[in-house]
Length: 590
Image (cartoon, rainbow, N blue to C red; front, top):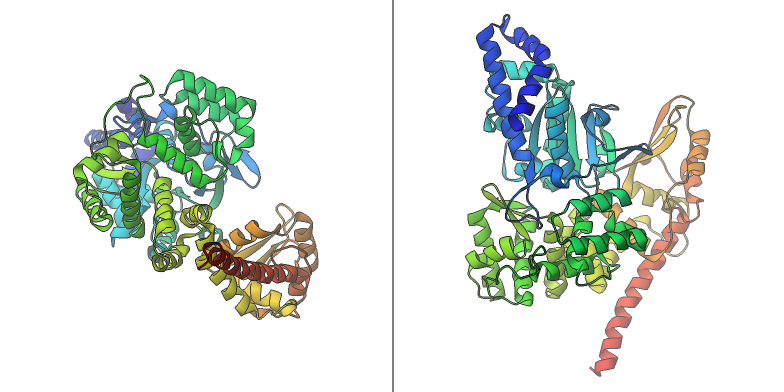
């Protein structure tokens, strides 16, 4: 099947391929045509073999064919839904696309589908680059592209490859921008912009968890991955290799009310799949994501062969669930701290050994790794490397470790990992597990810092609104064109602080963003017809008309009433911390 698809690609696009070759070589004889065919066939066969299969905790012992479990991905763009997206549908609006979605929503699987679809149906040769590789490399994006083409045997001259780039012969697929270290991102973005400027006809698709950085890059259209619908959720469960009776009961429960009542969990492909594991033992789905992962880990730890109803093997490490969890928490902390999501086996064993030494839990690294791969399936073998079955497990166990660490360690780790707040779930999970320490070491310091910068005491005025807005927003963009009139607020670069504050606000009161009506009023008052106006916040003060307008908006995060509420939240949290300590002293008579 792979060979047929590759050969079909060359035949389908032979006119364009040969025309580009003529630009490079002036003339193309039979030998060159044959060499081209072999080069394309070899490369596309290897790419298809690489990305048409993958492993998960359901198929830990053997890779499954992608289309045995892929149910299609719906995307949203400008409030319009793109059903079952593919290359043609994705690139209809722009050659440069960002696929944005939360962990477990299926971004990486969708990119694999794009690779296979481009081979089968498009004119583009796919180049897939996993962006986390830049964390441990000094390579440029151009270097990574060249390495990928060489690795999968696309044996053409540099001159011909460059001609193909200039003629739009490739589609560049970049997976996991959110996995790139923050200190590497600026260089990567420069590399992407350089590639776009030099090769504007080559499409680029980037996957990431939600991140504001792409909103400032005009060349990219941002697509949101839509949650699973009930029919797609049922389709996915039917495709999973698992006990048919359990699947039938689960699907029946989904259709009756479960999918509707737990939509935020069960519309996510990863969480839906995990829930299937736990459903036979516990039909009640917890409301907290941290409890969800706790139940999932227990199910994986005690996992039996669901097709036979018997346990398949004993635990080689001979650890109980508590010690096993402690070791994996330390293992996850080490890898997360270094932004490592996959690693060579020897490195993996070294991290296990260090975890054992730190915790004083004795276990053979080889036996423990065997349990992680075969018994619990928290890790999987991917080629010559070991990888997490999904990043979300790493994040949960890091949160679990922090929740049990000493106060000094807790404070340092929370402060350090607050830099990742917008791109992962660690501190959000920690808040569910241990809200008190999250409030003490994250919420209170962030609120204090922001409030001190506004200068508010009790009552807020326009100047406090201006100071608060200037902390987080650099530009107000008023777009007055008839087609898509709107108001855009561009962040000043530190998206994490703003995301943390929004997270806090949601937990303590009902606040809001600009309504459609308020956006229209801003456009009418401060915009210019058929123009885009950019207002720099640094040029404004408390007397500026647009700041005065924002400051009057009740319960809007840009208004002065919101700043007063923020001050109230800080006082409430400080009082809560003190009362908690006083109550413990009183109860225990300390």
